[in-house]
Image (cartoon, rainbow, N blue to C red; front, side):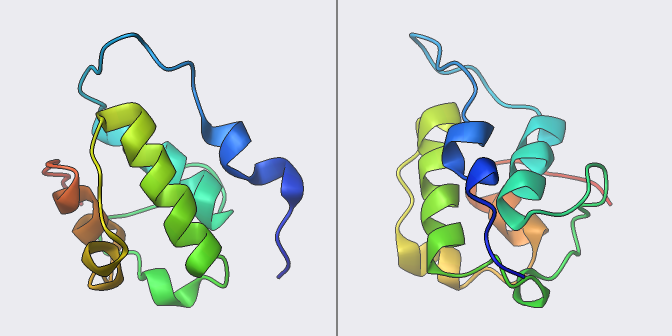
Length: 99
C-alpha cells in the first residue's frame, strides 16, 4: 500500500496550544490510526506495528512530530524502533492504555 499524501502529518496535526495539555489515550490512538492509515477505531494496545506497511522511517518521523506537537516530548528514533506495538508507543508517551 502506497502512502496517501493527504494523510501525512499535516492532517493529523491539531492546533497546537500555547502550552501542552495531556493527550487522552483516545487522541493518541486516533493519531496513530492516521499515521498507520488504518480505519478509525481499530487501533488496539496489542496492534503490531510491523504488520503495517506505513510503519516505516516516514511513519516513525510522523510519530516523532506528532508526540512533539501534542505532548511536548522529544523522542529519539531508537526509542521508537524498540517498540513492537501501539501499547509500547503509548508507554513512551507516559500513557497507560487499557486493551
